[in-house]
Image 1 (cartoon, rainbow, N blue to C red):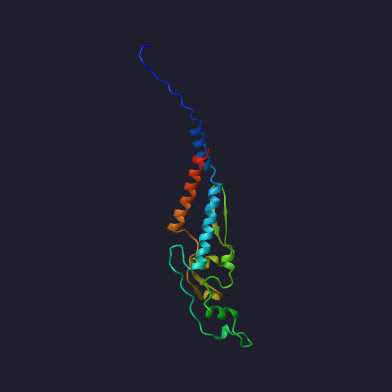
Image 2: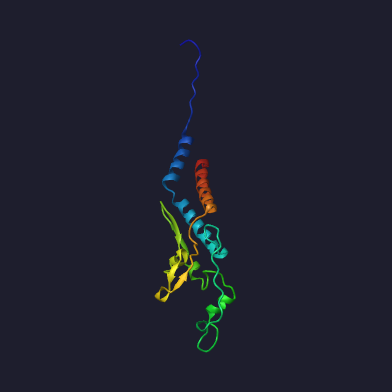
Length: 168
């Protein structure tokens, strides 16, 4: 053959391996889902601490009360719940059971977090409660994600993808 030619051979094994790792991350995201569930749980714990909802709005304060008859024991002493109000206990943390029941779990296709108390929904969404549904509970949302959480979730996924692409 007359003229000039060039032949280039390229071993693409490293590229194929990197692509396979990226596919594996996409097909088996369990570890990323666990990280996302943990992030959601921690973000919700922070909401109990700061008394704010996912939208960034402060929870409606507890109404200050005077010592009415129902706040006094039969022996005339003040009930613990009334003292807590006067001392300005944090909202939704009277006994700490709601926040303490917060947990998370994850699987191959999901990340979830929440609380397991029967009264959790009334505090999240608000509504009527108590005997004869005479008490109005104001919604104080604590579950959900905000723009910061979304950015953190995307960071988690990006780091996983970058780690898979960079691994040799």
